[in-house]
Image (cartoon, rainbow, N blue to C red; front, side):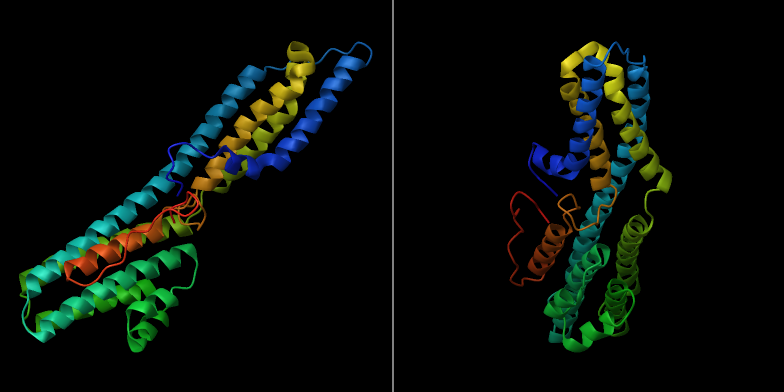
Length: 297
């Protein structure tokens, strides 16, 4: 995620400059042809009508992409809140008793931290083993990593530790039920994230807007040359840049877990979870993640 208040135009331009350059060459060719050859009158095209329809089409696509990005951010916010609630409840219910209670409390908290890091890696399609092994013992890490869904395996491990605490009568059934409700919230958040990751935007939303935008850019100089004359390449290219930039924005936002600069900042949010949960049990915590080259990962 780029946390700066102003967008970086260069990032958008880098993604569309090849198409924009080709359109500029086409604009120049159309302008030279109609203004230098013996009288040719450019066909009258309803450019305004076409542009209005295309703008509505592109706006609907970008809104759909942004809704996916924002839903991903909301789901991660829910996971952060649920993780804090889990740690707070565990610390309150287990208290500051014997060594076994302290061990259970720490194991639950550390496993929840490992779960958040594993989920982040799964959504980004990267290997979660480094983060999981950093936090858990070799046996615990191997037990989770051998599963097809390591994050879910770690969540199951948290549930087993809570069940152990109940069997040992360190928490009562009411407290166990409260913890289980928090676990359900965590599982629901993970399910929503996996739904976003595994369900792409429908093909029609992706292919038709791009096709119509490029077709409009091709027809644009024909409709403008009678009005703008030799300034047609500049005007047509600038309008094309606006439409291509909107297309690019939709592509950037459609997958909120794509491991790009436009990603939901899951690494920073996992760091937040790790800090808050370790501090809850009185353990040393790392520092918050800072943006790198203007990007918060």
